[in-house]
Length: 507
Image (cartoon, rainbow, N blue to C red; front, side):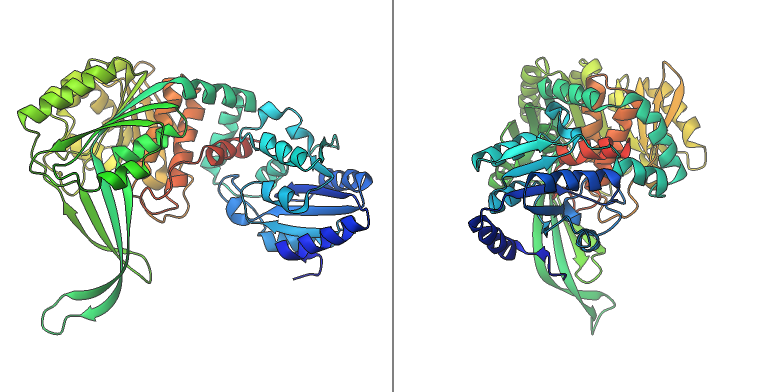
């Protein structure tokens, strides 16, 4: 590593020595992915203010500007900046914000570009935290007014990060986007009261080492190495919703012995008020997946569940709880995994509040052939995947568009979204009779489990406050992109990451 690219201890020692010599310290912080004349002017202004210029660079894993970014990894970015004579020291920052760097070197001046001058337009709100950190050390934050170029815009315009479909979608979505508009949408979402209904699922991932074929019988043997539990189902939807909305209610079920209840409550965000029905003669739904430790492919699954319907007494308890909560909700999200939680009676109760209802009803290996949409006719908003659409209509060959029209007519659905994996998603509104397509942004897939739940949470929030259609679809697709990068629901949605995805992709 070059001599002026320092680690934390090296940088701290250098700063202490320079401060003893009464040198003034100036800090600039950013991604600095594509260096342009605006950056050069920014550094020149910084050097005018002090004696020692430190530039901290956001590490790759903390750059949240959407797929394909940063263009250059943090080592290359640091090496390039090390050639600038204006810059004295370079530091690669492995934290999400610059606060740790500010606390480390206690700069006299902290420089930010003119984009941050209107602090309220910073969707992450990190600028307020950074300013407080600077002032705590008796420093001053300075906003420069250098010639403005957007690195993200230059990258979007000159680097082919996106497919033709993705680029075309961004061009349309840009017409409906600005930072202030996004802030207003997020403020509205903060105030809505959300009710989430559905089964809670524990997704257990068991990583195993393949030993080989059994010596006596024709099957493979594995040796377990590590295991990890993740909160799934409706509980994970509630977690994702609670990142954006301050008031979230969850109505769900667990086993009669209350297995995993402590784990579930520990993993639920604090602004979620939960009610768990203890289903008689049933375990808490546990879906074990066994993965090869080397290539991390799923080998097989083992599910512990009781798919019988609730007893009459349990059904009455559930319906009473729903009646008490649903009247107060501005948005109702139902995810029916088909494991015996929602009966026809419960579905009819929920459907009375049709205009608030966003539904996802899933076909999976445990319920295929038995679970469908029949109990949910005349609903406002439905999200299903293409396989579920074809299964529901028993049609393998017709176009998705024709099947969409048939489903909305047969079940009297107002808004329908079909998710199609790498093909993205399709939205259809029966009143307008128009199809809208949003591409997928997930070029690499780590795990599909929980992706639909993340999309449902994000998209329903945007639709519930009447956000522009193109932004609503894009936000849902961005949530799916974020979720598919990790196992199951190991990481809940990151508000800053998603808003930055929109902000930087639409420049």
